[in-house]
Image (cartoon, rainbow, N blue to C red):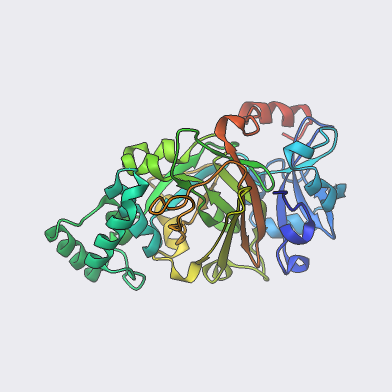
Amino acid sequence: MSLDTSTIFALPEDADSAVLVGRVWRPDVGGPSVVVVRDGAVVDISASAATMRDLCEDPDPAALAKATQGERLGDLADVLANAPRDRRDPAKPWLIAPVDLQAVKAAGVTFAVSMLERVIEEQAAGKPERAAEIRTMITETIGQDLSTLQPGSEQAMALKAYLIEKQAWSQYLEVGIGPDAEVFSKAQPMSAVGHLAEIGIHPRSTWNNPEPEVVLAVSSRGGIVGACLGNDVNLRDFEGRSALLLSKAKDNNASASLGPFIRLFDASFSLDDVRSATISLEVVGEDGFRLEGMSDMSRISRDPADIVGQTIGENHQYPDGFVLYLGTMFAPIEDRDRPGQGFTHKIGDVVTIGAARLGRLSNRVVHCADAEPWTFGTAALMRNLAKRRLL
């Protein structure tokens, strides 16, 4: 399967009115630049915002991105076409993840459907063949639709008491309907991959899946300044064995995909558009397998602003800001191979996540060790920016 590198594939349907910012690797300067998409071109605005962190810290990031004249690096079509590693000309610019110094955080168990799947993972202890039986037992006890239940409410606490009595309580239900959201560190700053890059699956995992999500860009002051798409690549078998293996299930080489661009909030796009977004997922395998799904943000159990508020505050600061995966209602249960085994990735799968007003994020699945190595970290970025006199 080939990756679609076209501009019409990557851009939102209303791209002409969108303020789209990202990052491009520039071989001529040996480092990344912050860019804005403008009239089909990629424009370097690093002279005004040396890092994406700096742009998001501006009082009005969208206004800064629109007002900065910048340096034209070339056509967006050419930059996208040069992004896949297997067809890249290393002497020309290519698209990379749209974040740099920000912490990469994620919220879990924010949708009722995926919450039930986390409970099933826990009960199955990482064994996919047990999932169907446990799924039936769990839904007979607590039902499938908990979307109207307000986390932390009296009704939620009454349900908790009932489930404890029935010996059906779970740590995933605690963060799903309890007062405190699950927020964890998805990946290290600078480690995320972008549109058309490879995403990594641990070679010992036999039960894993993509997680199509909206990702918010948040400043150090807690202001939500924009959004993009994300794939919170997940190893269901690792986390199912023990919740204490969350870091191994979530944080691996090339396991955090973001992009293709951050759409900054302005008069044409706001948090309300995120709240009403529909996120699509398509997985196409080299074996002819195809999986499609949807995630409706209006069915999220916790409001995005509330999750941000639980992430940052007087008890937890982020001086470089952060990006926050908001979770997904999508948890694939269709059998790919043998009955009862459910879905898991195969090497070569092409995963595409889309939203009408955020574009499409597409990646190819490889084993973590085979993904493009991550060698350019924070120290390298600081040295590069200093050399370019951008600090």
